[in-house]
Length: 267
Image 1 (tube, rainbow, N blue to C red):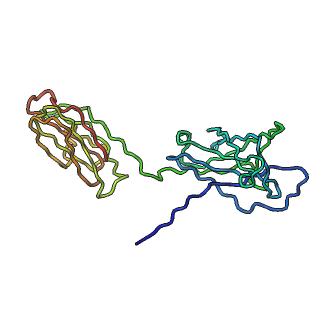
Image 2: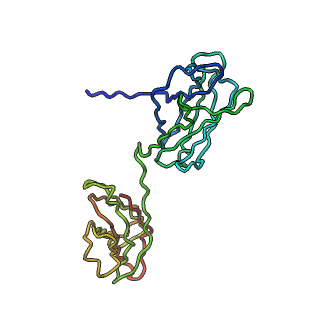
Image 3: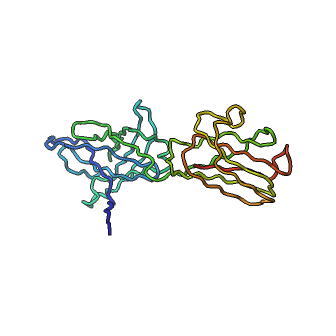
């Protein structure tokens, strides 16, 4: 049996406040960026230390995080929660920040920098440094697509009538996202439908089945005949296709597409 170890870690970094009467003796030798994931609430904790790398009590203080992009434009501001109770050594110097999933929607999958605005117990506003070299910027890396994304279905409702066939708009089959075994699903919403429905595909960029001269660029993927059908009928097929088109023919009318309420397509 194979095993894989997963880690439940506290995302924690050290920051520094300058205190009087303390010599800077210990350098912070490694500065990492904080990774933020778009599909989740992101929780991380800062630990406030002085330039001597000693934790400082921060109970009764306030702290906010201002996140900016590469142009130094403010993107969002997060107010921290002080965990330090003024007596417990386990939470000494700790301030926690939560960037919610909805806040993450404001952020692209790029690097950002953050500044910590710290209000001390005497109402003095200070900056918290990211290292012992008085660099104020904390680096954030926003990571997306760590979990599968739901791919919305495309609604097909527009048809043109050509030689007693109703031809849909040609839709993108997203070949850049798919492999040879990629699954495509088309759902027909039918009400007393009598007729034929065909699915055509093409590897030609920009081809339209509704243009007579371009129909030779298409190949038949699937063909179904329905008799007085009132249900949702699904058709699955695989493969790489640049674009697809739906062609329907009603046996009840040559001018009105009766009984085919809508079509949904997803690759």
